[in-house]
Image (cartoon, rainbow, N blue to C red; front, side, top):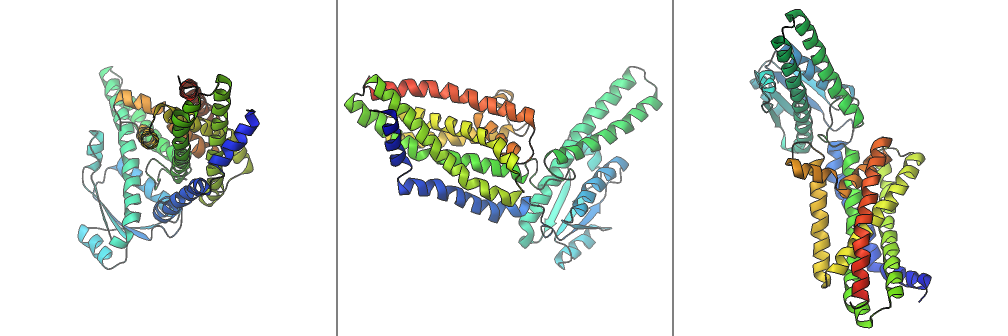
Length: 403
């Protein structure tokens, strides 16, 4: 059989099936609906996201007060909240109960000392039930920023102790200490700018809305492979093996499935792209830059589905293996994106996950392009495609030829 005839037939089976196309199109739409209804209120810079916040700051350390002022100034600059300092806890709780503020933040004494020792940040958040999601975003962002600040603070303190041990005079150490503290706050602020925010404050914690959108794109791409892995398992292990295809036909059937599955995944990505415009204005250059990445990602997912479908002789088992493989890779990728969440070996493995690289390619390419990271991630996905497509080709041929 001619390759084009096989490809046309395979596309008709995979994409011509109304149910398959509906799944490929509706899954992204459902995922985006959930994203915009439940997650975007926490992640966008909508002026109505937060109304007002009462603040009780009982730690009067000068450096820590500078940090809090920097964080809260950023919040007010973005007009997401108005911060009201209060003198005691009773006043803050009263304002909250009367509905005059939506969030009450209580920073306990010696919080700075706890940060110096590397301990958890001692802050309490109180809120009305109707503003639970706002408070969660507020809490996560402030704790994340304070945690990173604490890590930098510890480095500065260790450096100062080493300088004293080496006999450097106290005046020089004090000057370097002040410079180090300024650098810690400056670097924290830069950290926020890298993620697309004007200050260190990021409602998504360490993950801005663009990251979550990239995660949704990748997960929807994985979902689009489910129909392909189901068909591949049935074709390779039942239909083709019973007919004992010639080696030439098995090669043609393999590449037709690889291409048709890739087209279905790209169709899913095409549905997601216009909605990305709602998160942040997309430039044509960003879409053009991301398009090659989407093609490579689609080819990788396609090779993964063919490999799983060819190995698993039972179609239902193939479906569940693909599901759990995607779930595990996505979980490791998300956890690896935050340092310290995984043990050393798993952290390194997660950083090399093609799913992590795919998420990064979407969030980086579509919104804030960093070329070196883009090339690094696209290299990981391309290498992963080669690693998966070779065994997929071998196993598919063996199954199709009845070997």
